[in-house]
Image (cartoon, rainbow, N blue to C red; front, side):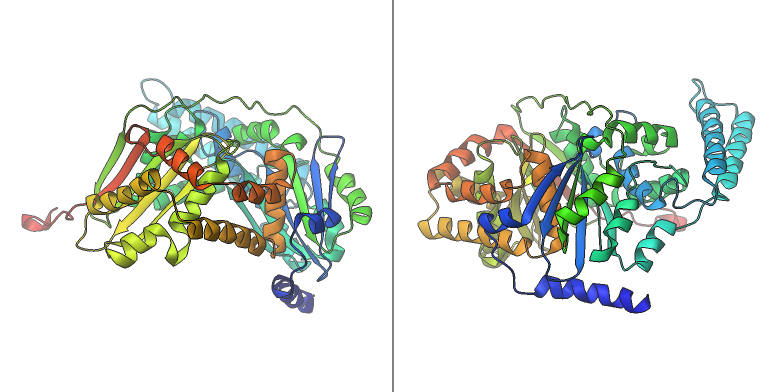
Length: 505
């Protein structure tokens, strides 16, 4: 078994660096098979028998944008719960554990109700209820097999066990030997989830928030920037969740969120590597087909109204100055989506990009600078972001002025033929490079299938970029990059507080 654990990562590296097969649409159509289970779950197979391994992505079309108001952070909690196993993995006695977890929820509901009581809680009663709740947690923890889910995967040669939550989706990944497809399918966590060790993980997330947002100037800026830019659509909610919500929602809330959003019609599973649809699809159907169909989650969200005035967020802090500005743009389904891709490459792709050459290389006023689309997601109307980190001795206004010079160039001058050709070449090359890695390809196939209903959009997107003209770039720049459509966020460096007399600050 130890030899297998050493061998699998080596196989993955060989697979990554092996000569790549043809990367055009026709070659992929010969190797990609899409199946839909009766319950609505979509499965994609991409055959790459270069090495006896496969990678998978389970793409859940639900992220923090679907967090209920007052319970932000629940989508992210699903990611944490995924590593805890399910009804037959991670437990010593599931019947006893479920009964113990029910007692935890009853105790927590009483404790939280007292804590939220109008006029304030009775302190003695609150302390007693908290003790009852924590004692119930301790009893439930006795049934937990800690880390059993991850240990099984590792012992069987799995690598790369991970998950991520974004505004638009939640993604689960790892890779395994090709002869472990049935074990992988058995280990799917979506049939009988168990919210074990929930409050322990909630505390972990609370600490994440303290570190990445509350104690981070950048984190605070981005959270406030998003709240200012998006006053209607769900991108104004932080993925990590608001602190008051994190301290309030329960495992019962999490299970409700799961049942509403983790339905088969909202799931796309992609397997890439040494897989065979004829052999492996019945295995996938055997295990994933058991998930009840349920009802598709509600998809309506408030529409972000047109912006008609500049908005700004200023954070004063004794830290590195930062400048960013964002312009409202439509969702990924907009006909001009490829134009934004071209502008992103022109402004930010490497040391030849316009913003790097201007602000970093030539004027030497910024450590970094760039511009990109897709902030903080793409499913809903979002932002095209410009940013810069000024070098010491240079101010936010200086880099802002330099960025606006480049924006004005986009609006008033056609880019050169050579620039447009290079943009299109780089975008195509970037796609080809991204297709080399089984894990990355699985994620891209699943996302394209989920977003568009057709994985071929990976290649159609290149065709749309090829059709972008110089006039398109000027037209979009003039329509979008205007002052009244702009939100500005800055960190202005202040001197740290100094100790006063007697050593007090």
